Every structure is written in C-alpha cells, then in structure tokens.
Image (tube, rainbow, N blue to C red; front, side, top):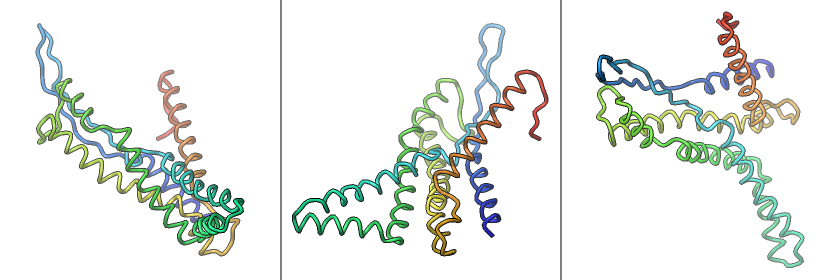
Length: 216
C-alpha cells in the first residue's frame, strides 16, 4: 500500500510540476522594406505550479517561529511568560491545528509568491511592444486582466496540490498510526524537480549534438 501511494504521489508531482496552461498568442504582420515580419501564432505558457517548493519552505519557517518564541518564553522566570510559552508550544503541538495551519499557509504563500514573481501587466506590455495579442482579447489592460484571471484559476489548483503534498506525511501518520512510513512534503518535491530538470538538461545536450533524444 505504501508503494502504491508513493507511486501515485510521485506521478502527481510530475504531472502538476510539468502542467501548464497554454494561452494562444498571435503576432500581427509587419512589412519592413522587402521583408515581412510577424504573422505567426505562438502561446504563452502559464505553469500550474509557478511557485515550486518556495511556499512550503516559507510555511515551515513561519510555523517554527512561534515554537521558538514559546521555548524562549518558558525560560523566563515569570508566570505570564511561562504560561504564554506553554500555550504557544501546546497550540502547535496539536496535530490537527498544526496540519490545518500548515495547509493554509502553503496555499497563501503560493498565491503570494506567484503574485510577486509573475506580473500580468508586464507580460501584457511586452506582448503589445512586440505586436502580439491574445485572439479575442484587446491589447493592454484587458489582456493583463485576462492573464491575471487565468493565472488565478490555475494557481488555485497548484496551491491546493502543494498544500496536500505538504500535509500528506501528517495524514499518513494519522491513518497508518506509524511515524516511519511517510511520503510527501518538501523532500519529494525537491527530488522530483531535480530529476525532471536533469532529464531536460540531458535531452537538451543530446539535441545540441544532433542525437535522437532517449525520451519518446
């Protein structure tokens, strides 16, 4: 059962990590001298998991901070500090509360990191400068709003998936009753991401040397 769960989780991580929403982009034809430029159709790839493992790392850091504060407060020889320290440590030692907070923080940080690193307005301006547009969408602010709308929808899927992967070890520990057989969390995301990137680099080197890729 553990092997089956492991294979399903790894397959899910690969699928979500590589999943992307292809927004079609067309380029207007431009004539310069005797040459014609543009007139081609491409696409704008929006990854479902735009943030990678960063939200999980942020969430763990936030959850560790109150525990650290609680440990410091328990060393202070005053009743209120000891009570506050025990309260913080007891709150986060509660398995259910810790799991819920962990999940919520991962979802929130996924949206936050995506918002910081991906600017729909800048993408819209770059498309407009290069004569590109999304078919059926007016260039400028309308294009930025459309990209933002699509990005929010696919980020929701990525955020929920990251949250489930993050709390999967806690769920498995509760279901199985054992602390040893767990899979999920940051480790599985990092291992799968590194493996995928390694395969891509090898494939790129093979293509550069005009060899047929080993992936079909």
